[in-house]
Length: 66
Image 1: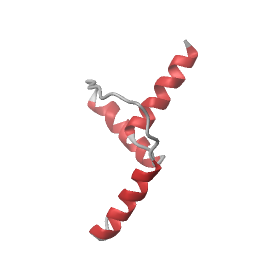
Image 2: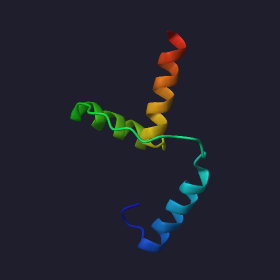
Image 3: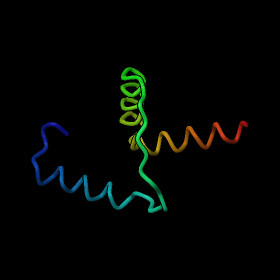
């Protein structure tokens, strides 16, 4: 992605935005350890997901167990 021009990057951004599922959501702020967020960020990049998607999946999995 680093070598792509700004117009090509915009095409990727638009296609990613179209793939998002629209849900009823609310914005929250959490204070988390920096190292944890770095790990989450890189995991999201590897799986081509947003950090929000990773957090949603993790919370849903946690709530299923309890």
